[in-house]
Length: 249
Image (spheres, rainbow, N blue to C red):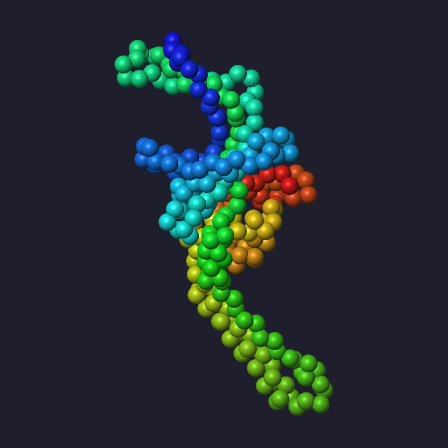
């Protein structure tokens, strides 16, 4: 059974990213979750809004205390397909099994990433610069080794010098790799979001080369935030999941 209120409420049915829903569920009762500002209609005639929230979105953006700003999301709403209503369990004094009609769903849509704030982008760039350690490559001119008039002893010394130089550069490269800062899971997520703002599709190997991170370190973050194209020109490449702003491009 269910009871019907005297005045029917108009409700929005909105799908939000999991990390944002979990963050909102942790907020105390009565706490403001964010501000919704109206925008313009999209190409399909749906209403769009900008959602600004200071609730920490679990690594997809800064917390309310980091980078000092809210995170912006895009809220898109359209008409629901058919009649949709919202029910909830009755209060403590209601008979067992009774449901209360909360209202009618007048709009249905979803929330997706709208981009990171300028302050947060600067934070990601500073983290990236601090973590980037590049080994320098020294060019060695060996053209003179082909000159037939060189004495054998001089050629031997030159070859020995080349071998010593290669060994020294290999040791420097190993030291640089060990000295490179290992990014935390949150920093890796920030880095992946930053790179997917530059282009929508990435091969794992290309992303590893671009970020200077090992593919094995990137793999769990890519599995969490991305999905792989199975068909088309970007087959086997990664793109962001729809809840993080990804889609067909």
